[in-house]
Image 1 (tube, rainbow, N blue to C red):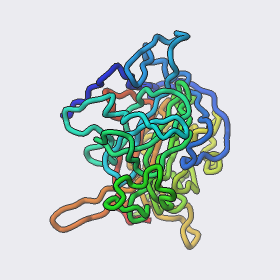
Image 2 (cartoon, rainbow, N blue to C red):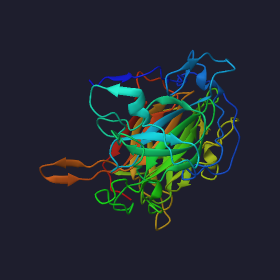
Image 3 (cartoon, helix red, strand yellow):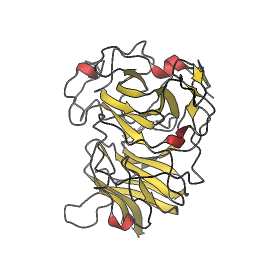
Image 4 (cartoon, helix red, strand yellow):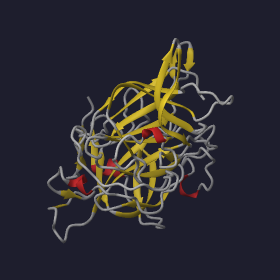
Length: 375
């Protein structure tokens, strides 16, 4: 088994509130677009640091909480949601500065299994790291190929002026594809566009930053949905109803979630409002009742004939308890390759328990390919 060792005293965060509710206050808010990395995050994770004893920066120094001289820290995880970009790392720069610092993973960790990076979700990768301590403040964020010696060559468009607020939790995600929908040729454009690429195309690779929640209201779970499937129409996340061999949407949580966006108050289905808890917050998480052995499905928001659209992705037999903070992401799926050729899968759903503890830098996520017709 590959062993990953911190080079320095870097904090790896496990929030650990997936079983008991931690409690937080929420507000209804305007839609959240993950394509807009600017502006302040609605970060309320003051309890994000309650499960560790000290804060440490990316260079290995640590200060006791409450020390007035201690630098400010945020916590971020890296997500590889671009199917053809390969393993990745990331770098940070002051807004507008050409000087990026990193690579973050290879600078702070060493692996006895070769190049250290985050690969697309599949049999050997969750596609997401644990939360790692980073400097706090506004930053431009660049994703680079794992194993890069410096931060010169970015993959896709950088996220600009991303708010990594003090004590906040964030997901730094690479979405899109280099080709064909992304319009970039990795063979002739080794930087996959980078900061100087201009328009990477509607589905080209780009870095997005999502503000995350640290906890759910007591007695409920918090669920957010991200549509990161290039070429996908606006979609609905809900439960499935099976009749014979056909599976169609049952009850819904969110509807009309377009590519490159996270769930928001504009997407929330009224039937989801089953409690006095605030229904959805500014980070796109809805407060819902726990459920067990439920199929989660994604389908186009509307079928051409106006009827119920068939599911394009399925996560079967899901059980999520009170207190869990969950991000569900609709992604492309890696094809099966054998002697008979390439056998593409339909889209897949990635389920991440955002506030679950971790043993190393690997995030608590699971992905399920769906053997169905694509959109």
